[in-house]
Image 1 (cartoon, rainbow over the protein chains, first blue to last red):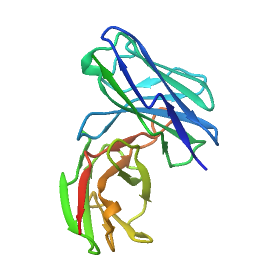
Image 2 (cartoon, helix red, strand yellow; image 1 turned 180 degrees about the vertical axis):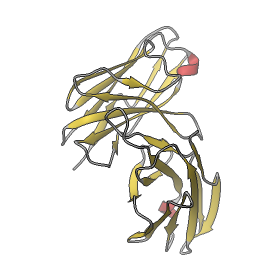
Image 3 (tube, rainbow over the protein chains, first blue to last red; image 1 turned 135 degrees about the horizontal axis):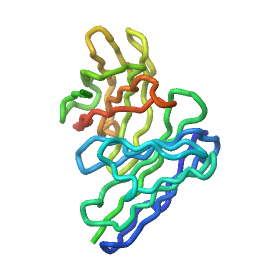
Image 4 (cartoon, rainbow over the protein chains, first blue to last red; image 1 turned 120 degrees about the vertical axis):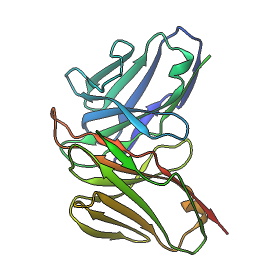
Length: 115
Length: 113
């Protein structure tokens, strides 16, 4: 149990285009979902936290207009990278937390490459 | 500020024991996690400590001292498949309706035959 999926697993796009990444909790309802970014050989950096039915909470330094997050249901959150640039190339990982439990379950990640 | 320190790299021999240390200075504390992450994959949960002491789970054990801001992950009977990055993460205090995780940079462990 407690499986989180992400789609796509990798994407290559041209500079200036927008990319949408989906995060789904397959066998549980996720009240809260988290979006992280990880650059090579670096740690996971929390970008934002989304709660179903409310606006996402962004970490300091993360542009909310560039990284649009929608938590439309208890099993789906989406991250849209708008007007992507090469510096946005990274590994994007989501996690989901059921209810008020302490554990987060991570998705397999999406590798974004912007040319 | 928030700071989590762990060694960048470690090497060990198959069958041996290795200890990965983590020290933290965070504004709040509501538990400490250890995750394993293979290259290009998502982190997988290993352990969670919220009280001082040792938690043992098979070949993996994790220790926490809150007064010292210190934790370690102990891996016994190392196997080649244990070669991965090990991430220490502190759960921040409850704020704004949720607890967020603050990750260390990770320790890359290489297990040799």
